[in-house]
Length: 206
Ligand code: AMP
Image 1 (cartoon, rainbow, N blue to C red):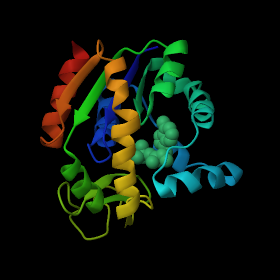
Image 2 (image 1 turned 135 degrees about the vertical axis):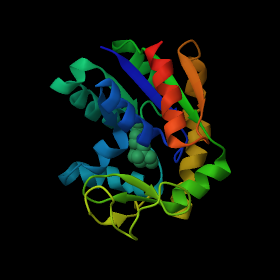
Image 3 (image 1 turned 180 degrees about the vertical axis):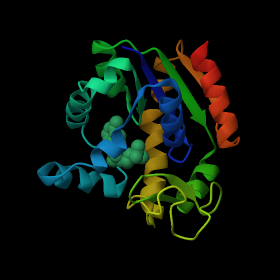
Image 4 (image 1 turned 90 degrees about the vertical axis):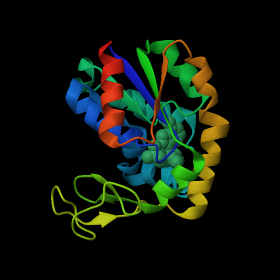
């Protein structure tokens, strides 16, 4: 199974890119953040506590949820992992059972990340992303261009959770780049969405 990992600080555009690239290359897109946000019942209670603070949920729980998702039929064609692994333990656990094909790092500065996250909104219905401070901006205030759904801010896109998530990225996630150094390609995430996308596609078609 082809496994491509997208890594980047929150706001780098990795979710946006993972969505576009998965559609273009016919791969399944697994965002662990979305998996957790869509949790229900007891599991939701368990994960919400950490997510709202901007902290990672436990590796065991994350792995269990992810492996279940990876067994679904659409994953046979290959996967883009967006938001996993987030620390070395998760990278080791993945490595034990699966062969990672390529790792794409989308790089932006902390100040750019802060700015982007503060303006980020998503469509409640189709999950399309917009940014009120940068781009893309919706044509009509508060309304999704694609499906007309309401645009909302994520609960963890508040200032204290954003700062915590940026800190967690540097401390826990960045060290895994070294672990993947032979498979790693770094892309400048400051460029326009289309340009970043072109670069990723050309790397993955190599
Ligand atoms: P994201 O949408 O990728 O920014 O993730 C939102 C939140 O979900 C994170 O701040 C964590 O609380 C949780 N989360 C997502 N992916 C993981 C992971 N691989 N391991 C642990 N927690 C995660």
